[in-house]
Image (cartoon, rainbow, N blue to C red; front, side):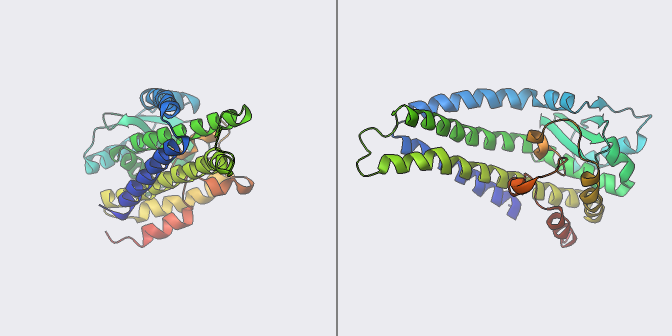
Amino acid sequence: MSMNRLKTFVLLATLSALLLGVGQLLGGYSGLIFAGVFVLVMNFGSYFFSDKVVLKMYRAKPASQTEHPQLFKAVREVVHLAGIEMPKVYVIPSANPNAFATGRNPKHSAIAVTTGIIDLLSYSELKGVIAHEISHIKNRDVLIQTIAATIAGVISYVAFMARWAAIFGGFGSGRDDDGGGLIGLLVLAIVTPLIATILQLAISRSREYLADESAAKTLHEPYGLASALQKLKTGVVRNPMRFGSPATSALFIANPFRDKGMLHWFSTHPPLDERIKKLHNMKI
């Protein structure tokens, strides 16, 4: 197991333990079960239908082999090296240089690239980006992110219910003499969902590192992807995405939206400089 896979496993285990701790803090599991069923249903729908939603959100159109022969050549070469089925290929009409993969498994997958990234990158750099996205598909990152979102969603929902219960005096009744109820409320309503969010973001960052590592190993060299990330570092800032939603930024190889103020602390992506450094230090 690589260090990045181990890190993802530990983070998911910690997030799961946090969920069990929330259940214990509540002193009963009926509310937790209700929240769990609700969020599971929401994430089940997201898992099976989010690919169609996000492709439509970003105005993605099926790519034409006659218009984008180099793109299809790159995808075919990477798919052959990775040993998975050919995904559907889409093009997004945006100057923002970016790409993302979606789909619930390797048999139902798609890759979308922007016109901006096609115009900006050389062929070897484009192959590096495609290999990164193929790695997300092969590593089943959509499934892992869905599990993380489900657990974090349950915790956030229970915290939301706890805040309402506190307003109407339904939380910690009979246990307020020693301040335990108030402390429990603060932990459940404020601290716990914050920790869950941080863990979820850490999982997202870990999967980005893993996709970079897998891409380099698939192509037997890390330099095309490293060079591509160097160009994306300035390209995404010069041409931020003009449509879509920041809530979907985790899908892209680089955040297509500008982080403002303290929002960069909650970024779904590791710093590009750090990713480039790790790629250059890799031993293939």
